[in-house]
Image 1 (spheres, helix red, strand yellow):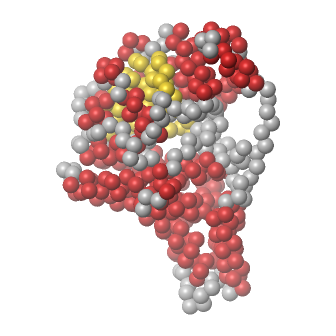
Image 2 (tube, rainbow, N blue to C red; image 1 turned 90 degrees about the vertical axis):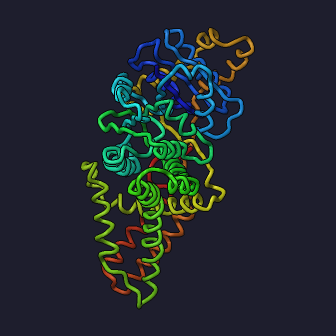
Image 3 (cartoon, rainbow, N blue to C red; image 1 turned 180 degrees about the vertical axis):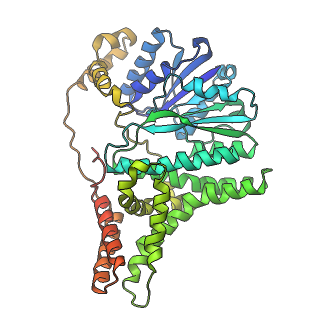
Length: 463
């Protein structure tokens, strides 16, 4: 018995295709229930999503629409509320699919059987596949990072430790494991990592399937990507503060404790952003103004290039983007460092959750069909069949949305990035006058990278 949950919040661009993909999963109809967990604040969008659910229900799909009146706790609160329904006790597994994810029909067939004969298995995680990875330079660079994450981090940890961070979606959980580990908690903005850590400390095991891929999309604008990365780096530091005592007192081996503390939490989320920001954005440019100070070439050249090559190996087609990747990662260290500090010391922005803006590219083959569905989604006869008389008052407002509106897109200005661009370019000028050689080229290109990001010249512009 499998429960499929689709948590969403104001996902106008992708709600139709996410619901359609879930409804086409190949699984016995009497053994599957799809929950559309809509946290949308837009009343018109709520009607459209409920309307979409009803249309699939008429086709015989076991699907329900659920909307919370008190929308607290973001995604964790949404999932926790859904798991409290009485009928959940009839189900053994729950598959979680975010709104922009489109699994193949055989997703459950390829994942659920792994639980057979393994009563200590809590999670089967599938890999993400990015439909828009070649859309622009920003998505290409994101693809490098995430390929390394799935090919190396998830696969190695899953093979040797039976543990890795749940990716929040494209995974199937044993409901018993969720319940015994404390369920979904609203204490951080990384509820997926939180439940994974607690389940691991309780002795549950995970399996990662690198050959099972679920289509999704990458943020195409720097604004969306920056907010996503802020949450992905502040949340783990919040969680680290909360979980450290539990990790130290748990019954898992010392090796697993060390791995969780230093590799799972500190290395990627704290040490590397701190190292990248302080060395390349602060120390190196300042040494250009101090004649006695000098950093060796291997520090500013060999080490970062070697690290970048290792990161790019899982996606060999991205080798032409090696240098842009290196420069961009140093540029992103500002956002990651700020997020890390806010999460570690529980500052105001640590609990900020902004839904990542979607473009609706979850499937390239569906783009034309999606456009056609959009043109028909506000059809009067379709709405009249499913809305009450009081709901028909919304019809006029819905029809107004059929009128094409020209939305102006513009570049945003990011002051922190521009300030560092000024510092680096000034240091590059100083380096040129002092004949520092390779230091000048690094500072020049890194300064130009900060300038491009500060002027929002990478990725799509926002409305």
